[in-house]
Length: 346
Ligand SMILES: NC(=O)c1ccc[n+]([C@@H]2O[C@H](COP(=O)([O-])OP(=O)(O)OC[C@H]3O[C@@H](n4cnc5c(N)ncnc54)[C@H](O)[C@@H]3O)[C@@H](O)[C@H]2O)c1
Image (cartoon, rainbow, N blue to C red):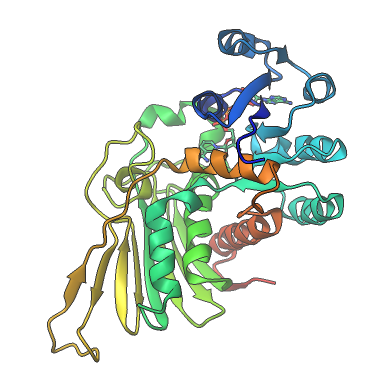
């Protein structure tokens, strides 16, 4: 079954949807068979791609019967669309976060298991080979017991990004819009989160939503992390500038994440691994090891994985249950900025 081409449809042909369309067209294991978008103006994207266009995604599912669907609509529409696909037994790749509604996401996670139809959530950084090399170093115990980590998302979004009204209002801001990726990797690399504290500020831009925040994280393992995020700060210390995943961000040779333990520490994405020869001691010279890794585009790796999920050769590596935990952590961070209190996760 591994060489079969799978027929894929994209629902939502906006900024990210058009990337998915291009990835499908470039991937030999998949064929684009339809595009659905509520906005009639998206029709020309389907015409250019040479596939049928639908404004009604349920009609598309009925007419085209794709082998898999990629859902790239605004977040609040992810689950209603995914439910229609599940009803018809069609596997889905749904963009992150799985939903903007935590309770509905939990409900959907149960429904998808009962339906026994695979659902993959699009946390594409999980496919980054540098992330997976770090995961192996940690899982092999080379850092010892994890103690502390710091994750940074310090970036400057150009001022006209905020000309769109919702980006200035409550419900936007870097915690809900950007931190989902960092929280997903925080959980993937360090473990499950127990409790969070957080403070936010809107003093740089003066909008209703925050432009900057600091977060303290306590993990079930006893490890601790801090996250520093701001979309009004000029700096190279963010994943976008350092990980070379997307050509629209100019690459810079720096790190965004620092993870430490009793035997060593590691920075990402450059994978600078520091340790001592033999027993650790602050009086000994630290040794730096950088193991080479072949870069790959994570979005393309994610599509290859989705194809194998459809062909039943692989299980989804980011399930709805898994993404619920990321969403739960994000919501706890948001709540902590509002209450200024420690928020414990269920
Ligand atoms: N993984 C990543 O790197 C990444 C990057 C950016 C965005 N995203 C995610 O992708 C999703 C879309 O983001 P975007 O920036 O492309 O948004 P966008 O606003 O540019 O595109 C959304 C599209 O969905 C369409 N749409 C709205 N209602 C619809 C409906 N009922 N049926 C069909 N189509 C409908 C809109 O017309 C629009 O074309 C979001 O979930 C976002 O979080 C992921």
